[in-house]
Length: 398
Image 1 (tube, rainbow, N blue to C red):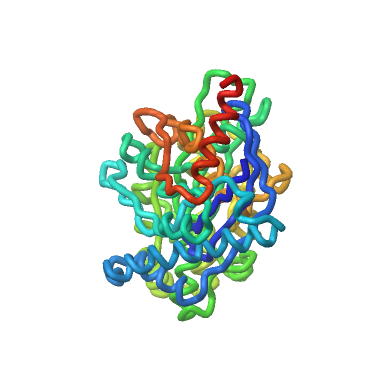
Image 2: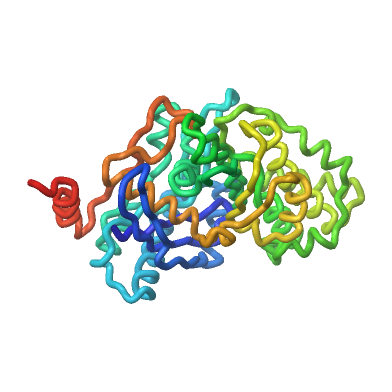
């Protein structure tokens, strides 16, 4: 099947789209990215998304409008990547859209009550004519899970090493990890959870401190100029979330603008420059990741495989390498993969599994009572044809 996976991460930079070719079924599932591209949000749309993270700035009429407008942005990304690949919408079987996460409600006991991702699936299906699957997380939450990290199941299917224990570490706005036992271990199960902040606090600190002139620390250059305040870092590293036992998830509702503003103020009170503050908060991301390995990895890690935008932050990566030695730190690209669109690929895989009525998450990863089929399906113009095609493939003798 040709499936387009869509996602916008907590950094809200734009829509990541991946046109993927997927075949087979677990445990012999094959998935590859045919084409991938990021379609940035218009500045005004991004500002609306960022404002919606703040309960003080969010209004129900704005969120209603934003849901439809994000659907339009996601649909435009689909039509663009299809055209740039030299295809037509009729060539694509499915769209699987994660949408834009605005809120992920974690209760004091660590369970997840609800989650919301905007980007209306009906708009996407109507504009493209392609059957669309969206709202990928809520069914797992309804089954008692965290609704995340969805990447863990796809890692389990596609990224295990024959003999080495791997940590598949994504550093987006929020960091998440999947601990993968080797293929030679036939009994152990995967463990996956959100490690804490990725780029979110760094991005928000820079955005607040520069009145929007800087949105992120390109290649970690600002952090490289600063000096880490280790006494402050030790205090920042003491947070109840880091101690909570997996499965666990978090988001910008915790590690977002409110915390960033408090950190910026505290750093200034300590007499730190902006470079020093960014260096210390960058070190916090690296330390929270390494701390998660020390606390929760079922056995020593042999390889750390980095993905997400944080892998471009050379300062953060150098800090992490130092903290996790003797484990080797690699990137998805070192394995011949494209980590810029890994999350879009995972959405495509989840959509493929949903269409074939198979679970899209592993209960040992999310904490759900059972594996459940994820998402909601909005029929496109190809819906009847797709049903017939799938039936023929799964019932060849009929």
